[in-house]
Length: 628
Image 1 (cartoon, rainbow, N blue to C red):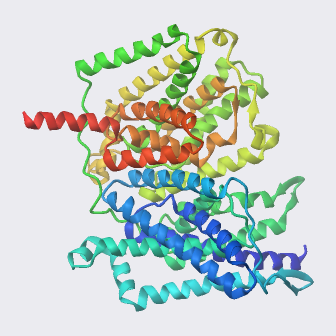
Image 2: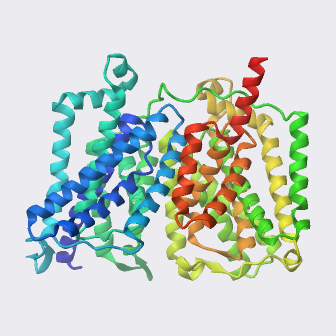
Image 3: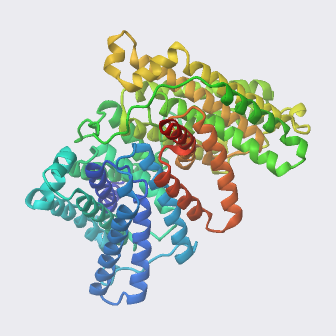
């Protein structure tokens, strides 16, 4: 093997580690103090690299001084944008549950993405080279860009600067105190609001700085936001939430493992060719899964403490009243009568909403009723869809058997993933589900001979009798309603009570003899089964399937539906799924910048109705009762 090539790859890894560290350490700082999982941090990186492109273009790149001024200005503007976001949006939801904070930051991703599209356009923009640093240095017969040596030094310098700032300044003392007990810090008279703003501004500045420094090597692109946030989450979780040194070690480890994988390339092992370079897509998530399984709090992290500002304990679930039963029956009858109006578009939209409702209910069963957050629930939806597609189209198995087998395959994946996930809780559990989902997405994306790769699979149609008229619509309606009622029956069974008891108090539940982990494992399996069932319905309704159905954005869609409807209500995910489907369809047909409009609607709902649409009705009902 060429050791000179390995040396070159390792040096390139050191250079890329610096930018990754700066993005991740900003996210780690923000989470350590505010406890907000900022999904929009990747968007700030994207804004930073676009600002750097514009400033270097406007001011020219004739001298290194002008170039560095443009880079610092881009980082400062990104920091100001972060502070503005914190003041206008996030400051109002610090007391909300983690999932609502995630929903708000995801809405910001949509708004920022369309704002960038409106101002800079859809084309990738490659910035100029740094004046005086555009050459290369020869080492061991290999040419290494001079600018890479600059990037190698930036990461350690930022680490030292942060160490001094956090350990030798009064502001740093306040930050470390807030990481330990922010409520006590506020009680001592420290202005907690402005401390949070300054931390958010610093984290955003670091994201913008990392982006601006990466401009000569990477074009400004609209896809950077979601791609970078996944990498940043992986670094933060591997290093330990809130640990600065841990983030540096994690960024360095990920970059170097990727470099080694690229160096190895395609290797023949016992007659089997393994392309290690393709593993570079998922190295960070593979490392994240390994670290979380063996060391749940990360390399240098600590167990997550329960915030004093957590949401109040949920009220016990109530059985359906007679008026509610009448409303439900009426809603089902209305759905059954839709085909009589001979509106094909409306029927297709409702069919999509029904499938989305089952997907959302399956997530609510895990996240709402069992209290286990998941950022990767789309893996079961996608596995169910791909199982149905592969069995019916490639193996020529009849649709009936493919449809039955699809959710079973998804449940088998849930058996495996759930066994590892139930050992974690809170944000660490959510991140491990994200890691597993990304691993499966990568396999599906690259296994062209079996899954179709990035092109997916086509020609997935139901049986002939279901293709006639409105038969598949009624089939979907029947399956979804039966599944929701079955999940509801489980919720009010003895298992359902054990599940909610495990969510509310693990110690008390164990004290009365309930095996909490076994209950949580069973929840994973049941939730995965019904998500896979929704995926099978989706595959046969669309006739095709792509890796997009396993992506992070699909998982976030499910979270949006659950939170939009109301996580504390059984009917909430159904209302949220229908609302989100119709809202999404409406805004797409209204404007080119539909993401921004959808994001602003979601932010408005989060700020005005944090209990969700279904929760608003319960709130008004209680308010009316109290007045009487």
